[in-house]
Length: 408
Image (tube, rainbow, N blue to C red; front, top):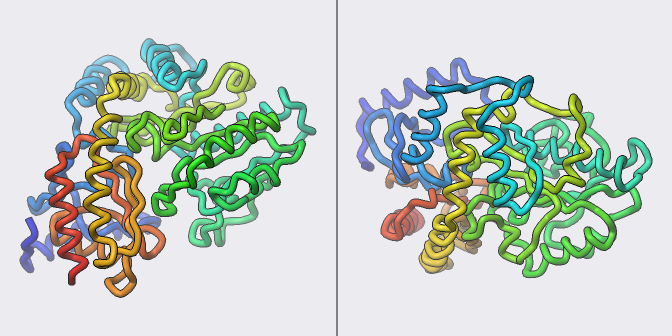
């Protein structure tokens, strides 16, 4: 699993060079070339196997090639894949009904990517602000949190404070007010009569799996209710079982006005995202004001329906919670041994690496040689998000590989 040879290195380098020759360099991938995946394991072009602790940033919550999801996709592939929303299709309605029920809401607006869901949520919030709340035209604002990551469209990076995402892409869309993450009082202070919504991640993923202080989400819910402001929860990475609950908001018993969902909603098979809210909110969007050629396509809806059905049993949430407690205990044992801090929510963890050991990127690259795939973020942090079908023994093995790497 971990041995290499000059021939293997040359073959791997050739594949990477071919990609670099023709693919825009908007990513800096780890030096591994994956060709197959099954469950929690992937295989590279030379036949070496790795434990996937990234799950495509939580898009693969159910693992690679889950049989139930593949069956749903294959069945639909043989029937109908795309109609556009110019016509009705027989898969969208059942999917929307099931997802709305899972969220405890009335309506679903289907899109494709997480960034599209965020953009859609912003449009919905503004339309609601003008048509329901009575905000003056073109004056609506949205309160956001520092350290956020909601996507990479120009509107979204305009309210990011990450220089790498933001610098060189202006001018930016106005109407966003940033406040410190985890500070509910700062949110309330930022609200004015023109505020339409508060948009936050219940747990900040890209920032390094940053957990807010206890009671923060409940306070945000109360503040939004008090000031007639929409609470929009970006659950694109944190939702759908990842944190041991259906949604990260469930950790505090909080229900936002709007859920933004994506990634795992497509079962790791194809892009699928959604905005989910009650009728008095999503009902403000009129025909022709928003849409997508592929949004709500029957293939994605068929897979999404199966995802929702799998989550309705509660099996994956329960599993993520129990295994997350197991993982946290193992990771905490590394603090002081090359790790400075650990943050865990279900099967989602941010591991801060002691600079004396190396950068997050360097540790991630060393893990490749030990048969483990993880990803760095913001310099010194390693993120792990294994598929929810992972076994405790596999987590134990992965932590031991990390311990070995940290020991140098």
